[in-house]
Image (cartoon, rainbow over all chains, first blue to last red; front, side, top):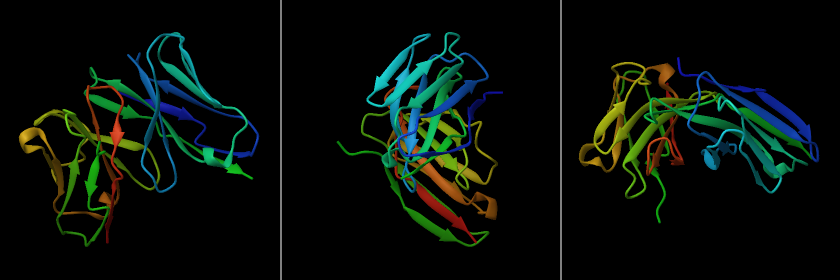
Amino acid sequence: GQQVMQIPQYQHVQEGEDFTTYCNSSTTLSNIQWYKQRPGGHPVFLIQLVKSGEVKKQKRLTFQFGEAKKNSSLHITATQTTDVGTYFCAGPFNYGQNFVFGPGTRLSVLP
Amino acid sequence: EAGVTQFPSHSVIEKGQTVTLRCDPISGHDNLYWYRRVMGKEIKFLLHFVKESKQDESGMPNNRFLAERTGGTYSTLKVQPAELEDSGVYFCASSQHPGRKLFFGSGTQLSVL
């Protein structure tokens, strides 16, 4: 079936520490997207990766798409309390008709 | 430009009642998706419209759920009759192209008592 897995499920870090979440798809993806949902909020698009091996940076966030286009990672350097939330990866299946989200990694940042 | 709008933001109903959720996508977005998040867990796909046509409804849990998008503009998701396990946050999202960036609404928090 169409599955997108993420680890870890939860991560608690001290402010200033780094954080990484990993995403794996059961099949090759045409692209992978990352979203962030703050507590009580709705998912907000962060980035889309399309090319094999692609690496993109947004300030303290680094996103990577695996060579086989089946896995991805999000790394946050020197976390801040504003980074708190759940990070989801998502990928299109069935020619984009079915957009599947991973279970998310919930990040807590202790001040 | 207005974002994706969902109504109501909260709904509390009793088991066996009917509830209708509404989603207004961003103007010009042909692709409309419904998702559900239960108890803070995964964002589960329900179905996908392209204009007024259902492209993929493989995520719809059962025939108590009915989604429509007449005219290809706004969409409704009706739950009839509601069961306790239907509680959760129902999100609508739209995009210009299938598989591309999704814009989410603020969601409808449904509580079935």
